[in-house]
Length: 356
Image (cartoon, rainbow, N blue to C red):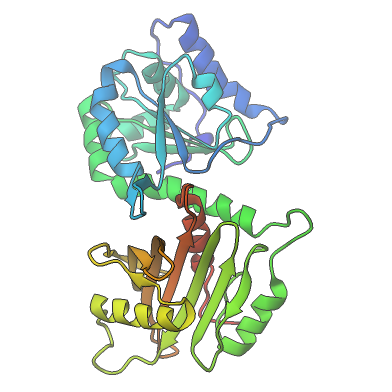
């Protein structure tokens, strides 16, 4: 991936409509303005554009790469793609995430935009298969990202998307996490990050975790190896639990152990919440460069007739001989859960093994 803000434009001779020229000028020059307003809208909305001649080839692969489903009581996705065309491109440039997918051979407006936005070096890198994704930050608005996906032919573009779904997703997801973190840890309406609570956690538990302005230390003690952070309206919470791994546990993570341990903790602290059978999914990942399991599921509480989504991590801190569970959950009936579940995940990703 290259940030194409480092490339001066190359102009390839071809005939253009008035709109194509206007579109290209918008990309090349409007972004240079020093008077940019803040981008608007949700951080999980992706405004995507492709030419009609290639839309059928790239639409489904991009939905697979970006609009990944999450486990919630009602189906939701991590990102929602809003497909546009030349009639609403100008409005899209006001939003946080804009994506253009077009090959060099595309005869439409967005193919022309891509060809004329790249320098000769960038153009040649695509032709030789070295790069296919280019990113520009704040092209039209502040706190905005523009992602361009391209290839010499439409078939090659489709193949690239299908074989690089993680890279495409990570570009957008990392950007979103970064800006959501900026918001939840910023000062707002006189409230700010809970530095006093963070210091006490570090002193008591021997690890660090950031506490946004809307969260409080609800329950838990270092002696019990348990910490519960909670926010209201809507309810979302994060817990940190650690145990001493025995010789049989080291290097092995049992999902059965995870469900039993989580349900046992929730019986004590959460009034009986439990994982819904058949909803647990997981993937292997890295947590601050340590091998980890990331899981998603749904929780339920039969007594309260309540439920919602769960996301969490399990990993071994071999330096301090601890196995950690970091777990986030949301209870937000009647509204989308994804934004608040992301709050939990951003908090969990702020976890640090070392207090120094």
